[in-house]
Image (cartoon, rainbow, N blue to C red; front, side):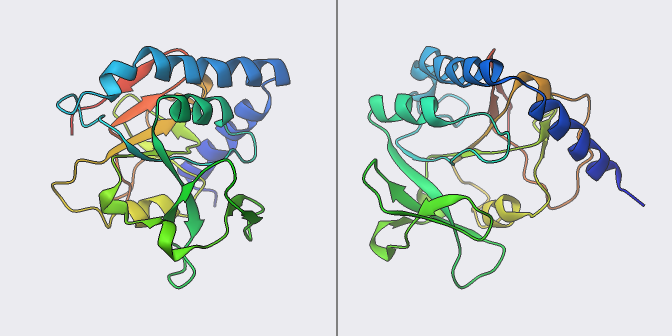
Length: 203
């Protein structure tokens, strides 16, 4: 029997994949514009845990909103960026490695580009200021539905209870749903950035 979460995952992925190339491009630019418009908020340490200098982000895969313009905006704002790498020794977990335009890349087993492992460039998850996460669906309570692999939830569970790291979901506006069925291991978001607005949540 297909679970409620899997049904929702399938429906929203179909909705997202139905966006035209032009709509995808406009959404990507809108996402970067929203970040730029809220830059003062992101740079204010006392505001909703959104201060950032060391920032983890990801490269787009399978219909996700294109992060390339946002990456360019982050770099223009002087942020230090990190990309997720599949943990070589702990299956199901991610590590985050520093990323620059000339960073050597490779394809992981999911066909996603990631930096070639360099232990000297790894940033412990607890030392990151912000982590931008992919998602399939989100609701206005800050709940996130991922692809089902649990990589981000397992990795974020390593954060200490009093952490200051902002967990920010990135999504198309059409990925908003009334309620995401949540599980005990789901990690709620600090904020969600879409092409039309920034949602923030008290944690």
